[in-house]
Length: 157
Ligand code: HEC
Ligand code: HEC
Ligand code: HEC
Ligand code: HEC
Ligand code: HEC
Picture (tube, rainbow, N blue to C red):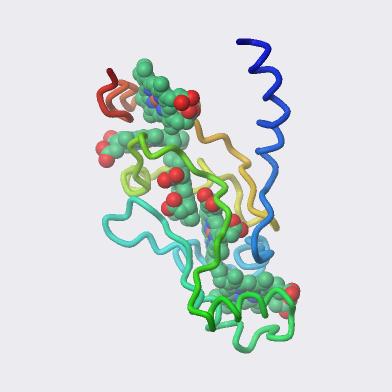
């Protein structure tokens, strides 16, 4: 059992490297340099459990005219013209059997950076903070929020 686990360790570490995205989008450029607000792109529509990824039209509002000759922008323009969603590779993702809501955390004044780090410095989105059962529970313990199993999970058999 232990041996099998150890054999998978390198794989787990490798998985923590930033994934290759279909278009090399930079938060550093758009948030750090251009000062765009997170919610400009991650609109968190009601009931606000998810933050969502921006519509291609939103990118194209700028990129019709900004750098249209760039190879990366041409990839973007093609997704837009074909009415296809860009298949962004997920960086933070937890299993669907976990109760999760952005809204309840934002309402409790937890900052994006508490869970996603200092995003404006990232030229490639990477998992700079762990988001797993341990890290969820660490913060809940600190903020005196419940850590009952059924707070985050359905009753397990
Ligand atoms: C100009 C649009 C834009 C702005 C502004 C923006 N983002 Fe993003 N964000 C994206 C796009 C596109 C992706 C998918 C590509 C990637 O992961 O780099 C993404 C991905 C992410 C992810 C990874 C989610 C996952 O599970 O894959 C996080 C976390 C994130 N953004 C947080 C933020 C935060 C925090 C801010 C503000 C500080 C912000 N973003 C501002 C466009 C934006
Ligand atoms: C508010 C305007 C604005 C929005 C919205 C915007 N961008 Fe940009 N983007 C820029 C600017 C400005 C640059 C820097 C251009 C330069 O280097 O002169 C840039 C640079 C880029 C580059 C690098 C291009 C290159 O070859 O150097 C990519 C790729 C890119 N944006 C993709 C996106 C994607 C994908 C979205 C939507 C998720 C998006 N942008 C939304 C303004 C915007
Ligand atoms: C308490 C921790 C926490 C906070 C605070 C937080 N996030 Fe997240 N974020 C997560 C987790 C966990 C996921 C993965 C959710 C999933 O898999 O369904 C995620 C996923 C995302 C995604 C991917 C799309 C989605 O909704 O699943 C984006 C984009 C994102 N977060 C942006 C933000 C932004 C912007 C803020 C601040 C306005 C923020 N997050 C605040 C933990 C957090
Ligand atoms: C940085 C601190 C922090 C982290 C990290 C964090 N939480 Fe929370 N969580 C809170 C706070 C604060 C509340 C709000 C409690 C309240 O409303 O009284 C909360 C509330 C919740 C709720 C109750 C939601 C509701 O609508 O009542 C759930 C479920 C939850 N968290 C799950 C998670 C999961 C799953 C993770 C990890 C993926 C996580 N939390 C990570 C601080 C955190
Ligand atoms: C604050 C939220 C939170 C609480 C409280 C919590 N969990 Fe979890 N749990 C998670 C998250 C997030 C994951 C998925 C990520 C991971 O595996 O770390 C998870 C995963 C699991 C898994 C699946 C592990 C796997 O590898 O497939 C089990 C089993 C589990 N939890 C049991 C429990 C039990 C038992 C309790 C009570 C002692 C509990 N959890 C309390 C958030 C929570």
